Length: 416
DNA sequence: TGTGCCGGGAT
DNA sequence: ATCCCGGCACA
Image (cartoon, rainbow, N blue to C red; front, top):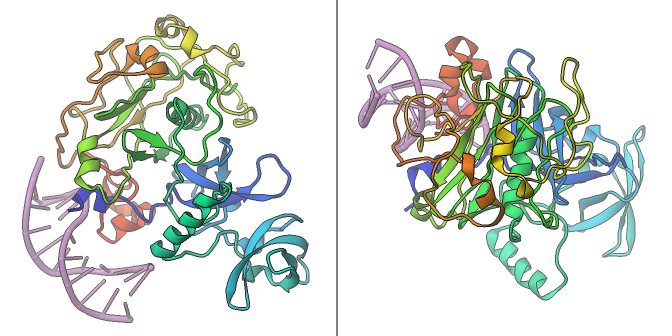
């Protein structure tokens, strides 16, 4: 029986959605990625999204530069030679490569290598993603691929939130760290982040993670100083914690209980969401130092005014005791991620004590990072604690509610 | 009484 | 599929 929670999880949420965006490398190619998080800018209308790519890179994209369901259509983009597209030829879907795109005449010349033909199409006739197939067909195709060479395209048969899984030891932690760090280091304030990860068995899985580095090192851009102090998840409870950005802030844990996943094994995935909130307390301990090097350079290109200069590069977490992070001061910036999760301890966001015992064994890098870990206790859902669109935006701003809230359905934006 | 959202109807 | 809302559970 599917648990109510898993059924309520936002299957239509943009988080986790497979989309395409211009390659951050700047070659003009539209490449597949997964929406990992979004940030709404109250009052400004526009949202920005963190998109992860199959090679492990991340990029923060405005909604205008994202192609996919719920975003832009392909028609407004320019295709360059070599772009992979899908099109229907003689009633069958074929994959082809763009050779030329004449925007004025709306003609795209596509070479369909499989058929050995070239065809002239309007851009509306082209797709970046393969059409949705029935699960049976997908399974059949998987059987075929298993015998053949590995498929490298994220934009293949995946539809929506399905995330291709490839587990590598240590990579899960690293990838999550990348995502979390990317979120936490964004300079904007007064906005909401919602992130999504997929839990399979006991670990987070992400699309095509990069080769695991030998040591866990975490990146923070040269913009707001931020720290990832702990990042842990275990077998029974997944717990992730991190602190960042100076003395006034910490990041709340996001966690989930495996029992939930087991309650609905057919689903095979669990999501958790967290949002950033303002921390008003002044008496938190100081945190600083900036572990670096995991995220690719250029991920956070902007360096807003009033932000302190870059902190030293490349401190590898695995070599530096967490206490070192705690001992340094840092410029303040208010950042906190709260779990908005039924598995929270009590009323307000709990503090990260300097050290907390872990309820489960840790391994590898996570273990070394565990001394500032927070824990999440018994799964007590307290109704009314979770912020939902209605509470967050108020009745008068109903237009800002997520669709589900507007329809009196389970909130997609602030999951509990 | 307010909130969250299930279940179901209309289109 | 999308949109809407009655009505219930719960705080």
